[in-house]
Length: 127
Image (tube, rainbow, N blue to C red; front, top):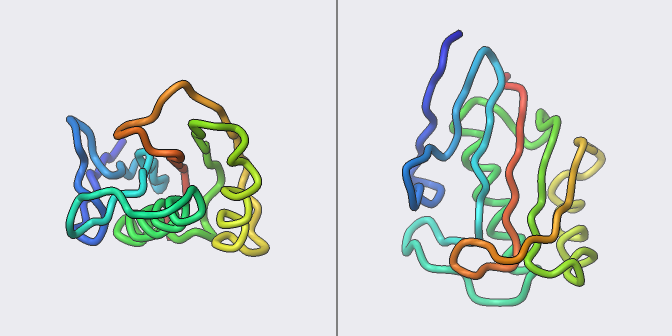
């Protein structure tokens, strides 16, 4: 198996001992993205919709650095600090994916890094 670590300065740097993504045999496994601005490494201002916009932008940039795109995503996992945010997150998520409908799980968790409202990870096919 061939493994390749993905890093791009256009997405937030990892805030721990992990990679933005790993590519293995034509598949990209993206680490969870939170709403960090990649330049300032600060959380974006705004509600859960604004946070989700930044998360989706970060995810798209990491996918592109790995040679994939949003339309090659096969599975996502959404982590929410509050399941009451489901509809707002879903609206932003749906706009970014358009007619593409990857498999998905949405999970409410007790807390997310930096106390954000949303984190999203994904698996995609390269190319």
